[in-house]
Length: 381
Image (tube, rainbow, N blue to C red; front, side):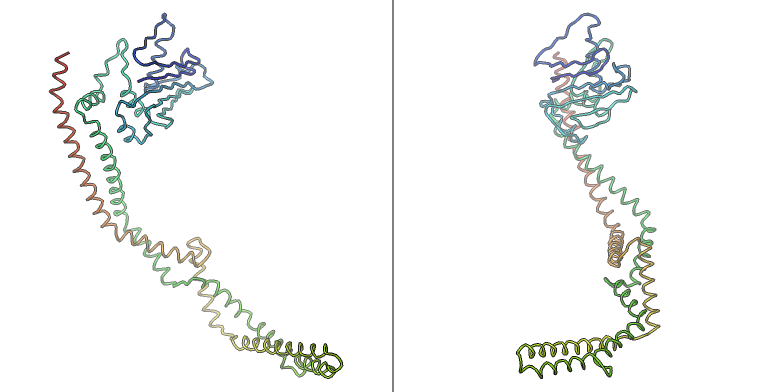
């Protein structure tokens, strides 16, 4: 039932809000009062074609909005089929710009004009001079028959099932297309994977190689400086340990004069022990340094290999390269399973086709069974 009609900037109407009460409503007026304009505005809201001649003020849009109570019309199937939010109080709106372009809305959701018109045909029947009755409309006849045959809910189930069927069939077609072009992609991913597997990259390897190369490339300077440290601490004829022992012994010799002297002597002993530890650790580091040009070359080549892969794949770390390797393996696994996926999808589509045909058969039988009832009712009229 039409509850309200709002008209803005349409034809001769600047603004009008009309509320319709229950039961029978009559609008009267002299010729030119605007009765036909209201009917045209309602037709626009229901999906009739429009142009900019309907726009009163060309600097603004023309807006027509119709509010309907549809709770008793069993239109849930229509909203589900068109992915719209169902509301008992539904609003149909048209907006027409000065250039003649229009937009359609159902409950504030943009829709195509054909969807708006389809719903409008289910909501209201306009009988005007020289206009055919809606009974000549195929959708109206189907709705009329299905209402008498009590299969509107069956139509809703069929629409939902058919929508699912279309989705599954589309996915099947996409998998088949993917299968047809899969070999080229499989060859590509296999090449990428082999290249990464042959490189045998380990997490953290890049930083390790860079650190080791830096050490080897500066080995001569490191050896020289570590040798200087060891000599200064313990190996030279005059070294730090000798001076510390000399100072320690001097303090010990006067410790009988004050306890603080002995405390300082003991602290120097601790320092001597620490210096020996430092010298020993420096010696170990020195012993582990080898100057091998061959190793430098091997590490440089390994670093070049990793850097080329980093540049090729547009990443910065070896961890990211390992992630690409894992993702490539997963993609290849999907392609290897593509035949199984297609077989499974075909089975789903075939099962849905059977269900759709069965549902369609049920609806057809109900419609045929209602035929005699319709004939009887018409004859009775």
